Amino acid sequence: MSDTRRAIFLVVGTIIVLDQLTKYLIDSSMRLYQSEELIGGFLALTYVRNTGAAFGLLANAPAWFRQPFFYLTTGVAIVILGLFLRRLEEHERLARLSIVAIAGGAVGNLIDRIRFGYVIDFLDVSWRGYHWPTFNVADSCITLGVLGLLWSSVWGTASRQGG
Image 1 (tube, rainbow, N blue to C red):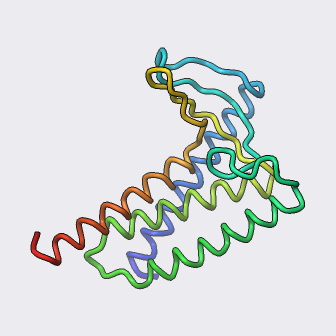
Image 2: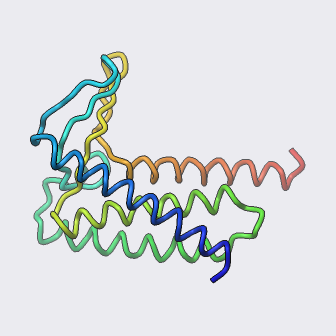
Image 3: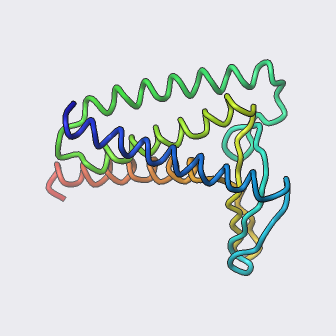
């Protein structure tokens, strides 16, 4: 196995372990909907179960549709991410790391959906009266990965054009 492939598996595995470990700790130490403030008015740990996608999308859809839909879309996304990963050149490190972060996060949330039928969320952020939907480590990796891909797309394009 190449060093690059080994590094990919290491990062994906680390994301999955951290995601599942934090969810286990929340699930085993908090009651559903319990909230513990960490940073006043900004960050709390709040235990919720999300049956939907990001921001609770499709949470009210029937389980017979929702579960297979999430399994299928996650599987397709992981295959597409793998195909993109294979096409990247060696110097495209940020894009590679971003794709790996998205894949690790997707697998972390998929594990929850398979085990429980929902995703455990617990990071609860508020800022000046605005409350962000509760999320988890996997969601953070997916979000950072998408931002990294956007950044590498813009930066990569600018550098190829000499700007």
